[in-house]
Each structure stands twice: as structure tokens, then as C-alpha cells.
Image (cartoon, rainbow, N blue to C red; front, side, top):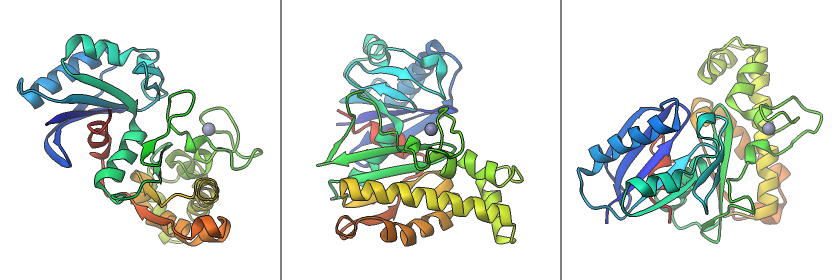
Length: 288
Ligand SMILES: [Zn+2]
């Protein structure tokens, strides 16, 4: 039966009508600046997608810390006006069928595991590098949420306690080395985006070069430790920064095997994500 997947991001809300791995219809709109308007927009998008057709369930991925049991947004740096919002409850009052809420990167990891590069793999680490860094981990084919019922904050793993200050206020997080904002910062703001850092690096700009190197090293160190800890079948790297700077992916492929415990490294595949922006809502349709 058809399902609905919704991806609520900082800049846009995307939704799709999904049957298995097939996206039958998709739609997107800018994220409104209040939870009330957000709900109204979701209602419009869903009416447009379903045309009152019956659906099996609605899954929602949100960029933030989510209490998946309550379906509540604990907090979201990108959507501060949704902080504390009981999304599942509000949706249940408006729509029929089961409603599920989870973190957006968990959803993207699930989409890759079921329909993307991770098909058939049960232990997967997904890392998505954009402006910030998000992660999702599947162990024995299940997403892990931990005691806080939230996501897996791989971007805020400390790789150097004396390192640069991160957006979260702590020092030396992975994100402060390998996130899009950090890559631009350490290229001395010469570039407007990571594509430009890559272009400058190819032209021989030393700072752009060092910045990409620093990003690749940070990600490799973090990933090697995750591989040593979890012994996954597959690591999936995705997100705008990895697409814009394939050199980071190449550095990871070369450096990780030199750092990780050989026995944990033996059977792991490191792959690029298959899906682009549809991963969030596709994965959300699989929740529950
Ligand atoms: Zn941090």
C-alpha cells in the first residue's frame, strides 16, 4: 500500500507518495517560519499528493533531535520555532493512519539501506556531510536511537579536545573540521561554497588545499574509530559536500584502512550514497 514520506528541513519541506522503492509523486516548498504555518503547508502538500486516496501511513523526518517515542521535536538548530513541538500528536489530530517521526539523517540512512547502495547490508554507518554533519547507524538492520531517542550525533564526536570551536559550543568536533562551514572557514572565506574551495584547490591555492586535507583527515579519523567500534558491513557517505568534493571521499578510502583495527576493517565497504535530496522523504516513508 502507498505511503507518504515527509522531510522537514531548514530551508524546504519535501514530501513524496511512495510505493515500495517507487516515488509516485513528489513535491516541495520553502519551510515556513512557524510550526502552525508548517502544519498548514504539510496539509496542502498531502492533499496534493494523495487526492484523498487511502494511504498506509505517514513518516516524517525532521532536521533535529527527535523523541521518536513521543514524536516530539526536542530541539532543532535549523528549525528553532519547532523546538518542543508535539509533531506526531498534531499530525494525528489532522490525518488518518499511523504517524511516525524520526531524525532526517536516520531516514536518509534507512533509504540507502533498503533501496540504495546498502541493499542486503544489516550493519551500516551513514554519514551525511552538508553545512553540518549528520549520521545514522543501523545495527542488525535496526536504526539505533539510544536513551534520548534521538539521532546519532556523529558530527559532534570530539576528534581533538583542543581543536577549534564548533557550532555546538564545544571544541574539536568532527563538524569543526569536515562540515561545509568549517571547510569554507579554513579556506579563509575565499570561497562562497565548497565547489569553489575545490576549484581554488585545483588552481593550487594552498589554504583551499589545506582545508580539504583537514576535512578528509578529520572524517577518516572519526570513521576509522566508528569502524573499530561497530564493525559495520558498510559505511555510506553522502551529502552536498561529499558530492562537491569527491577528493574527501578518496582521502577517506585511502586513510581509514591505515587507522582502523584491521579485523574490523576486513569486510567493510565504503560507498557513496545513491540518493540525493529524495533520501529524506523516501526513508521517512519506511518508518514504523
Ligand atoms: Zn559540535
